[in-house]
Image (cartoon, rainbow, N blue to C red):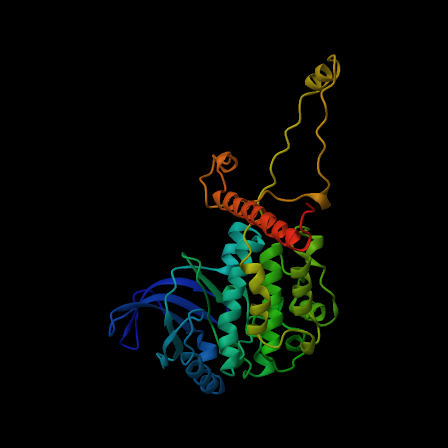
Length: 368
């Protein structure tokens, strides 16, 4: 297909957005609904495979039923001009792989919120019974406002129906992000997507994936048997707890990982909501010459005793009964209630003296 062509008498191809080993992606205009879309047109050798056509339709139909803010919406799919195509919403922005190339590694505060969004979208698909099978930063589109959306659900599963002799590294997906069970030829599960999310997280925070090799076979062996280098050996300022989560996700056994992307996203939430730590207050030290002058003066000034940590009590806030800045007014006020009670006590005691005196004189009259 060329730019300007009309696909299925409905979609006008405007410009090529990208090209890969299995498909070309175009920015197009839907003439029927008058809107801009993105269209992925698969290569002719894939489109000509009847088994693949059947599986592609099944997977595209399942992906079209996914409706989530972190999943690219599938509008349409079909077969025209001997080509399979899938029509999706257009996301203005770049994929995560491009952003990593441009910016280098991401900080925890900037990178983890993106992974949490990916977990939300993929976790939604897991609840719907779908496994992505090809989780990688190339399939994560980031808009200008920071919204991440996952794309290409089901395409990798459809490609798996092609005969083994026709498979290539591109057809199988991205060996850099394969789970060990996928590399061994076993069927993927939601835990496989979780492993791939761990590889993406490692690369996002470190700037490089945990395993690199010159061929797909070597990469497969590394995923199956090699232990990744702990990420803190590259980036020491990454929290230890976050490193433990990443190493758990990169476990060789699926049962040792989180079962679904939802679980991983919930665990990462506490790292995605933490603000940047405040900068410590600067410590002002006197110049050496000032210290020398003070030490040579006549009488030394008394040193202030700092309270011990265990005996410090914070100052109490001023009561609301008086305005701040005038605490001395309290000592000048007279407590008239206390004064009145005191007078009553004096009068009571004074009134009892004649009473007891009369009783005494009644039983002890004076001698005349």
